[in-house]
Structures are given as C-alpha cells and as structure tokens.
Length: 323
Image (cartoon, rainbow, N blue to C red; front, side, top):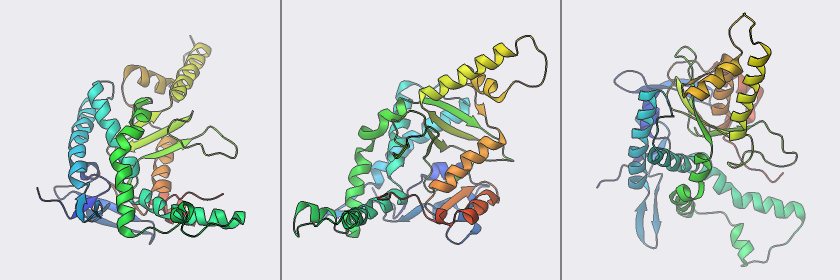
C-alpha cells in the first residue's frame, strides 16, 4: 500500500466540512503574516512525510495507522451530524471517537514543537537554579537537543500509545453537541482540540484532562461542535436552570434564560444553541491554541485579527514555560 507523501495533522474529513464547493476550498488565516487566503483542504494542516521516520535502519510511518483510525472516526462524526445528536452513539462508537480524540491531542505540529522545546526548557530551569549537570549522565542526555528523526520517533511513540493513555479521560466527560448558524460559524484551527477551565487553581495549571471544571472542544462543522464537559459543569447548569424555573414559576414573560434552554437541550439530547458570546469564546480558543493557521467556511477573521493586535504572543502556538 502506497503511503501518502503529504500527511495531515488535521484530518481532511474535518477540513472538508469547512470547505465550499466541489473543490473543497476553505478560507485560511495565517497568524504569522496576518493574511487571509483561500486554499484547497489538501494543501493545509499538512507537511511532507510528517509521520515518517527511521528506526534501526528501517523506514517507518504512522500514516497508514492514522488513516485507518480517521476512517472509523469519520463514520462516527457523520452519524453525529446526521442524527444531530451525540445521544444516539453506541458504546463502540464513543470508544472509537475517544481514541481519535486522544490521538488528535498529540499528533499536531504544536505538540511536536512543545516536545522539541522540552530539553531547552529543562536547561533553562537548571541554569536558573544554578545547578550543574555531569557530562554524559542520564540528566545530561535529557537536556540535549533532539535530531529531526529522533523528534519524529519519540512523538510517534506518544501518538501510537495515545488511545491507551488518554481515551478514558474523554469517555468520562459529558458529551454535548453545540450549535451555531452559518452566519456566525465555528472556526477550525491546525490544533483544533482545545481546552479551557474557569476553575482557578492558584500557582498551578488547570488544563489537565482529568481536572474538575475542564471543558474540551472539537469543531465538527461550521455549525456543530463536540463539547466535552466535566460532569460538575453539567450539574451546575441543571441546578441553575432549576433555580431560575422555580423562581419564575407561574410568571409570564420573555424567553427562558439561556441556562434553562441549555439544560433542556442537555436533557433532550438536542444540540445546545450557542449565544453570540458563546460562539466568540469558542472561536477565541481556536485562535489561542492554533499553531499558525485558522480555517473558516467564510472570509471573516476579525476576531483573530483583534486578538493578535492585543496579544502579539498569540502568533505562535501555546508553549510550556519554566515559570
């Protein structure tokens, strides 16, 4: 079986959902140059031989394994969009999608850049602490820069083990289908599996997959996205809706509060309609987490432009620091 030379770190089946016309043309925004342009999905979120490497004199590629996983995940995503719900998924389908999500977490250019930066980060930490590393020691090997091939090999191991390492964290979340309109579409980026957590953890990170309050998102199309919420968030929504409904019982008036509508959608399995503020927050996460490129079904990147003007450091992807 011939292995594709151009290898995508965002699957083409996802990119095509954001494309237009028979040529699968998608709008692209380059954060590094602040430039928007149209492109075929074959030419974006990809690099030549991205998953190919040498090991003990043998040529190895993850591309066939990834292609097989993408094929299974594509079928599951198609069923979600067709049913317009995640409630209809069978256990096996959820497991397939969880494995796909686990792999997507670590298969991107952003993850590879972070892995490559790890030795430098450790060196900086040692220098700041004023410590010494004995030449030739295990610690000395840990802080040496990686060759291009070693970088590919090491990250390939992480990718291949990702379903066993991370799938359970996705399965333990409450899965919700978020919705918007084509006039205010969701964005997709070259690092599309994004996270946020509004629960403060002083002096500690709060974006771990298993942490209370974590929210994980993946765009599925311009109008639908998979949201995976910590169960405590869903409980909070239902509790808030109950309080609002009880307080307003028997009182006629305007449309129900957004929390009530969200609670109703969660209970029925229908898509949760996102307000303009929700959509903006969702899209801002795609901008923040993207390595370089953002994709859209329409040529409107005003949000990205304004965010980059205010925060120029967002022109590159997220990076761990020694702080």
